[in-house]
Amino acid sequence: MPDYSQLSALLPDVPVCILPETASTNSDARALLLRGGAHGSLVVAARQTSGRGRMGRAFCSEEGGLYMSLLLRGAWPAGQLTTLCAVAVCRAVERLTQLHLDIKWVNDAQLDGKKVCGILCEGAWSGAHPLGMVAGIGINLSQPSFPPELAYIVRSLYPKGDAPCTHAQLCASVYREIIDNLSAMPAHMPEYRARCVTLHRPIKWQQEGVCHSGYALDVDDDGGLIVDTLQEQITISAGEVSVRPAQN
Image (cartoon, rainbow, N blue to C red):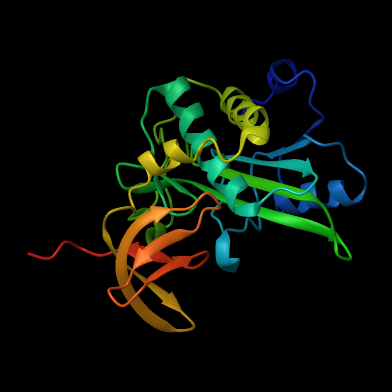
């Protein structure tokens, strides 16, 4: 199990729950929120058995990764929070390891074109009243390998286990980046745009089972992808987008 013994000292003012294994840190954080958990509470697990990604997909969560979820009380724009989390991960990784990460719209951090981080932000409601958000982050820090169906698109930052930082140090750094910049959203968006490899490239996406294509122009302050389809300019707020290969 990754060593999280430093975490309480690194985040002395934060309620932290550290688990050797759980189904989903997001589910745990949401349950904590509904029970009255404090703003800023953090759930961390060495392994998830039912990790979730966007669009209902499973998120591979074997030991060696960092799996963390923050409980945030109040109304926070989901798109802005998701993009802030992506920037926070990039900043924390770069500070601790000197590795430069890119972002694939909307929430995947990449190293050398392969995914090393996924983010899932989910809301909790009481009737029509928003109770808060849960920001879930999974970072592939030191898993040595991945299933064959993932290995061509996913990697670890340090598959040989020689990371220059601990899981606890990376967790604390990502946490502070998010918490310290929440009230300034969307001030992080210029950096998000600069890191976003989806921009200024031809793309394709699926909507209601139909494949579309266009050119990615920009990302708005709520995380929407602004696309030129040649017929019109539209904004995509959800879905699976892929960059098309360059045409000769």
